[in-house]
Length: 413
Image 1 (cartoon, rainbow, N blue to C red):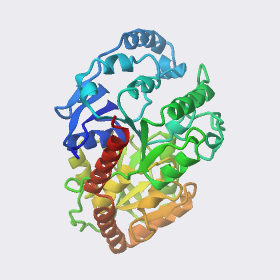
Image 2 (cartoon, helix red, strand yellow; image 1 turned 135 degrees about the horizontal axis):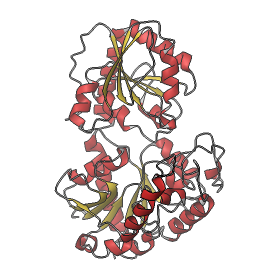
Image 3 (tube, rainbow, N blue to C red; image 1 turned 120 degrees about the vertical axis):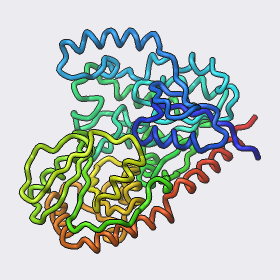
Image 4 (tube, rainbow, N blue to C red; image 1 turned 180 degrees about the vertical axis):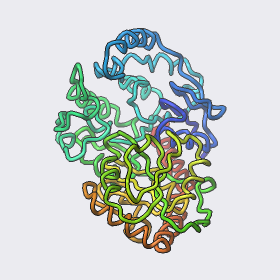
């Protein structure tokens, strides 16, 4: 059968991991019609922009006034929990020739203020839709993840953690409304909606959730690494342990665990930092600040090849693309055993695993790494082999194309 024609939609073509993955998929799929986004970084020729909507101008004007007095720069739509409204999604899509020409619409994260959830009702009258489940937003009342809170499995939208988005200083708590709305829309449209989960851990949360109790059609397709970019140069000859750390205030990245562990290091190490600078001074740690953010994959691959260890203790990872890319580059990754990162790491063989709350364990592991550079680099080499055997981009694309064909055959009229 001919390859189905696909229209891709996301908030941006150069955003977070989920958006970058969809952009890479669209770029390599030979029957891509277009990739429509709200924020266009012009990364390649088929990326096109949705027009700026009237409501964006209105809310933008309100935000300008609000920011003069607010202590936090959180836009009004987030405060009102209406980021999935007033985006005029369907009015734009129905005017696009690529929409009427495509066989399948493939969409990245529905949240982040670019897509009207209710537009799915109109879209699926004409086209089947694939939705990436790249975080747990689809399963909750609004949070991208809710650690240690299983309310989403029982239809309870409230959480114990009031610091989670969207509950950090809300004006209106509409989470239960959103959870009920998602369940209603997804179940009503189940014959035309198809989901892609990106790890076994995500699949488990997906199947256990109250919203998805209707029995959705889905496949688990793990992302793959572009090994022509992320590769192991096998040129690690320095004599002092080099550790990489992405320093973020995002609570899910577990920043404090790393910072606390560094104070307990008793062996000399070089710490390379991307993100926010580390202000503290540690007796045995020499800090090298690289950049606030790295956009270019080639540059990031070069950085990976200049370090031995990536410390990545995230507590909310549905796959962990940076873990896979670092492994492909020969890095020994230290990750937590509580999320999908664990699926990528065999302890002491293709990486190292720690408890998400144990700073002493992390410090001990880093001290061990400093004293055992040969073993650390052997683990990094095995990590590269693991990526080449199980996590290639070619494998991901083959499985995605097979899913497209299945959807096309199942829904063609």
